[in-house]
Length: 489
Ligand SMILES: [Zn+2]
Image (cartoon, rainbow, N blue to C red; front, side, top):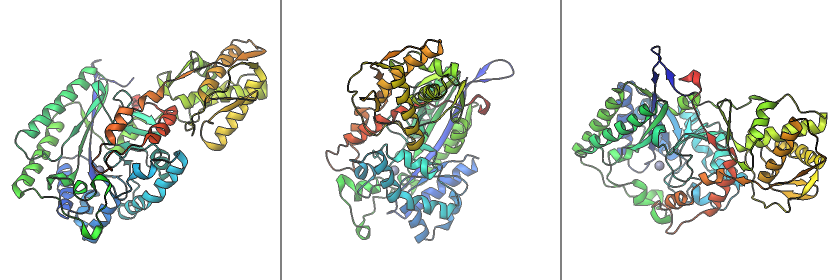
């Protein structure tokens, strides 16, 4: 799956190329032109880009009467890049100590008007979101889901599934891309300097070749900050670094590039676009295209009891799994196994099939009290309670009470799995052993990646937010690789 077989029978790789732009500098009027020029260059080359707008940037375009810029952007896809970007408190600063639900509401409250402004001006919902600088935070995900923003398009090392695109909290993530699955190329301040674009093209060719040689598919994510075409330093480094806010009426403009450098930058950018266009396996895509291509086929799918049983085999280690060429997250496995056992408790037989659900992960991490042998019915009763908890709350419970003992969801799932395998074989044990499981997906949230993010110049010196790591790890129950559906290739 994932490759295209040409008529000749030869396997042909697909190289998806997405151009995205973080449009955030609301203090430098000269940077407005950069949005327009880049949008026009793409358009004249028949490429749709993704322009991720900061709410305040969009409002400043309106205040400055730049309808020409707004018109030029309408030929492209619009994404969201927060309401005020680097103005303190930034996303990670205000979400720092919050849980998933509280943080989700806070994000909506603070950022929602930026999304509304995009809808008001462009008549569309943003297709994607990406964090300012190093301000990645997990609470953003359920908020995006609620706001109807289906894709997270950015670069971060905070969370990374082996350099592939992945699903997390029901949102498609195009972040770190590596190996045969792609790469991320940055075109920023250096555009227009001698030798840079040749180097960027070589980088493109290297990633391209890796993908083609892999024989399947991959994504080249090319990003730019339009302001860097006209300035030599970041607008926010000048006004909002180290945790300090400059009042809006006192902001300083970053240093501007001389005219000839600016023009050389546009020429370089266009040369790069044409270079990408010249490659036979390239398919230009937007965030929404990627969402359609990578559509999650496990969503709402009905799984046969044989498939559920296969998912339940070998659950001492809990992680995402593959069944019939389809990835299923740990939280989906939890749902499918739990729902099958709850059904058994009610009807005395296993159901022939189970409709999938995608619950969020638990909110808190709890240690199991004691793992002992319990009566089968005690486990099945617990499965019934866990099922209705998920149906009511849309997430996995922090713990499940089995025979009066608190059992964490990973241990509970491993114990359920053993019982399901027996019942499926026609055995009805009187007692079942509660067992300990290893929960693996949390390793994809990297402490080192998080620390790297926190070195963003806009954060106060020594900024750390370990609660974000904790909350993010709990939600790796929802993590799984994303793959293109065969029909879309
Ligand atoms: Zn940004």
